Image (cartoon, rainbow over all chains, first blue to last red; front, top):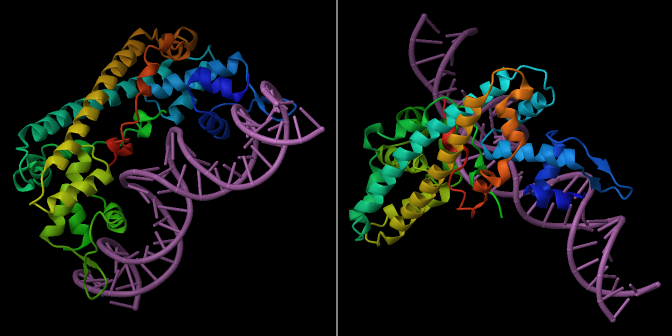
Length: 155
Length: 155
DNA sequence: GCTACAATCTGTAGCGACTACAGGAGCAAG
DNA sequence: CTTGCTCCTGTAGTCGCTACAGATTGTAGC
């Protein structure tokens, strides 16, 4: 199958597939006589694996590790489980933050009197950082920057 | 106050402050005779506003709009409130996704037999995308990419 | 065969929001 | 007068794509 079909089947952008190949997340595929990339089921599966892992928020370096682990089934899964646990932790922290965030945003919107800016709670709330109430939230360890800009990609 | 103090007080990286100045989110500050930037309370407040808005997930273009609104208090707050409502919607969607994500990750971790990779649920789950169960999650509209990589920045 | 158009190719540049670094200047304390 | 700190400018790197330019190849209709 050519790259277009692989892209359609996996839901991964053509450019992204080539990008994955370039950075070594996907292996260099066989080429047809005309120079076009030719993929098989194994490639489709590997790409599916990558996509699913990315959907779960693993960054590409984690994906690399997981792929390597997948390819030596005799190895211990300690490592894979550790990566997943780290990911789970990051997700839970993120959820906590977002819930607080939602409350503050909801309050802002709710209290906006729909009058002029000088009475608008949206602006006011932003202007008065509430004694580090929320602003401390962003300040934890940099947990491997697990969530890039991918949380709203797509066509 | 110099840039270092402003940075310490606001919790915003020095380089980031200069970056904000460069892209016009912060105005060019007064310079001391030695060429160093000199800030006052107004600047600190403006930066606090920016930081808080960023913490709430507004992207820099939204921040720009909000800043502009803040500076003409006679205007209607319709606009600010609209931005905040959009933001709230995006946050709620994001929370939904993350909750589903957490479940899948938790299940993965939970079911890992802690043996070899060939029996590991973490790898297995990634390899078998469960008929688009979760993978459709990433595929909505691109809601203005409101959340960049900022969700784990900091020292 | 000719033409139009689609799919693919390579290579490079751009995005957002920073972050890091090189190489230099200024300034205070010991 | 040296050490060490803060600050300066300017540029390049990060991540994970995405977009484009310009070339080639394949396919379908006339």
